[in-house]
Image 1: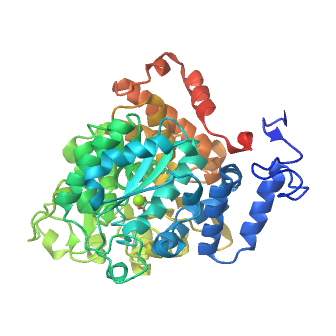
Image 2: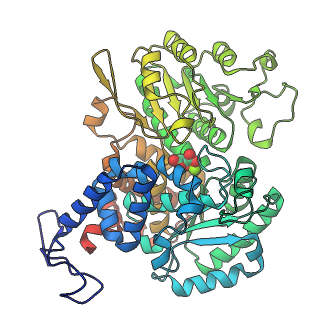
Image 3: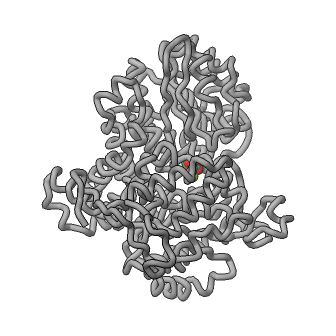
Length: 549
Ligand SMILES: O=C([O-])CC(=O)C(=O)O
Ligand SMILES: [Mg+2]
């Protein structure tokens, strides 16, 4: 096989992997470019989003190299189909599309563990280890589906989000697909529709209390670590009251992180670092209002707060820049209810706090420079609120981060119109550019997909023992620093999605260096490398589908 100038292998006729020549395949199957082009043409001919998703899932199982070549070369077009927002639709319809074709061929490509499996987890994992194609699994995304995106409890439908995130680990982070394992922990569901649905593929019983889920995860994590000692575990889409304890119980014992608390925290911090600079308002004068005080809202607020401390503020000075709003109004110590643990750190103590019950009231009271939505309630940044942000700020920062699209607190178009085109905007789900008064505006996508592939890749390559907060901060800083001159000239908050592999590489280097500083790396060979050597090493380790076609 020859290679072209891009190092991409050339081949005029693709040798079918199954069947005998002359019988089972047409004569001109084609070069890899043709194979990818054919899949793209087919994808574009399919009208419905869910059908596009199932087509891509079946392509992934039939030939993962074509799938990842297609996704890698058409990131902007494919990411919304294999990940947010269409993945939300897939999770909602999981019982009908399960098992997606990808679970047929490789026996260990997904793992469902139910509460009834508790006594046998060790044995189940040991069996699985004998069936995995790579000696060692490197990364797993684990969910219980109790809060999938902003869609609520979808039970074992959460498998879609675990698979979607892992597809991005491969496409955007260059992790070997054979070393990835999506896992759903089936703790039951409190979704009435699923409980009543005879076609539901999970346990049709109410969710276990949090304490029992925590005890299950204690056993699960210990057995996972015994079976796959280097495996990185990403906790995903657990509801808030479980997400925080799972992170705190496990983060010092195992290499793990919570994507909604930390991945979202890091991606929003990176966009906010850019937006603060563009706003021309010094950090000490920023006033940041969060609408939504669940795992993502609090995770993001605390991540930015710690960043302010790193920039020289005292803890008290940093905390004073933040206000949180939940469904009962301003989160404050004196508002007359018992605040859950995760809301206390940034709760306010001003005396008129109990009177501030609605978002509009708090916005008028705080006069924020930045308004960030992680509420899962679509449309809550009303025209009036957006106009007010435009009135009090030269360059208002508005991030509508809830997913998928309908859950976004406002659309990009509404934000541009409400602020007369002066907004610095990011959303969790993708929005198209907008034309306003003859000018084109481009939105930022502040989705944790910019962080987790690079964070996970760095953690895998350094073989970390744990993932301290500094590694997450390093990933945010590397992302903020990764914009090209041309992207900065376009006033973008995040790099172009098509460059995500390159960005993940840079993030991985930042994460490896942070791990070395804290002595949590077990791959000490990387310590002697200079930055250029380390970057080359990371690049070399990355899976490249076209080379394997
Ligand atoms: O999955 C996404 O697109 C981002 C995320 O973690 C969430 O919304 O829970
Ligand atoms: Mg999530």
